[in-house]
Image (cartoon, rainbow, N blue to C red; front, side, top):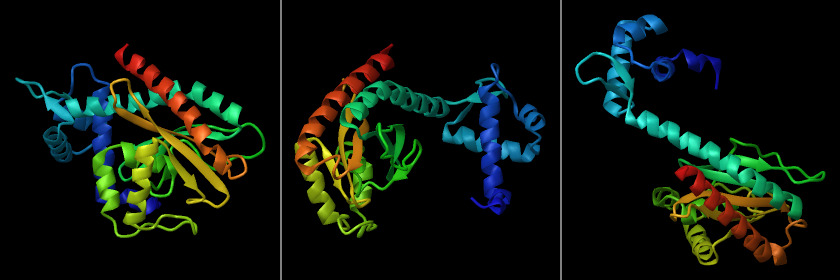
Length: 261
């Protein structure tokens, strides 16, 4: 982001709103608008507008018979969602390390983020071959194995949004570029319970991915391994998918225990 963008009114309002949320997160009794204004050095009129907006959206709530505000239900739910994601990444890491070491490939864990996927965990393969992926990296859904798993088994609204597009970005000659091609592939993914990316995002690279579910059947993430087409040969994909499914079941079970603990 360019430095000049931080000086725009919109960016300033966002920074002030986040400052108010962070300030209230550290307050036990809550604060009123005057206290927030003084503490954060934000004009009272601006503080009033932001606080009322956050209250209307459910991120703040005002005490029933007073003027003090505290974090609302949506802010707590948002925080819990982040913590669950972080816990899932930690829970998955040991099993991903076993996969990476035994198969000598890189393991990834990804979750949906709007109409993309984002890596929340990565375990590098032993040896010299490394991939320039990282935790926090976003990827398109139509051309990656984890993306296809998210589309096939994740939130329906994401799948509908992606399939409503008329054309997709082409990365290689193997990339699926139309909704018809993608839908056909997603039906195959749903039948086999795993997805593959055969040089669709990057030449000479193959990925295999499976869904991770909680014991209650809730989709949690996509678990994958990534290697060169020599490391993951075409005739080894089904065997690797079976290993991934076993690992995903263990991760999902462990995550369910943590969430109920």
